[in-house]
Length: 134
Image 1: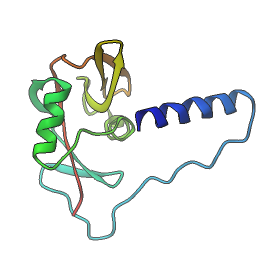
Image 2: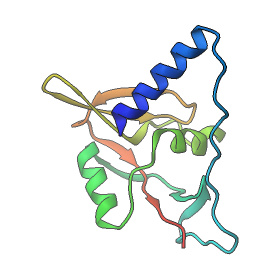
Image 3: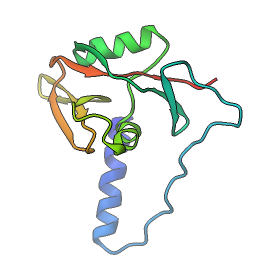
């Protein structure tokens, strides 16, 4: 899935550089009327994102496993960037993308200003989870 997203981004950038017409922007999913989110979350882009950071600093893998054990997931990069667009936090937090550089496993952090960092996945960092709306 990451490979497909990277290839799509590279293809779009290449087309834009050549002056080719761009495809229509994708539609952001929204929840059906009457949709509710669990307590402590806010509906954003069709998902329920926790409004408070979890303060326990965990590795990317530990964060992911914690969210999964609760039936949740780590937020996607674009989802978290738009959620944090109001500057909710200056503290970098985990997003869902992981990378490999040789033998090293890397993962991404995003801050409230939208900046992204790639760090060792063994770094201990704060995070939040995303739940499905009901």
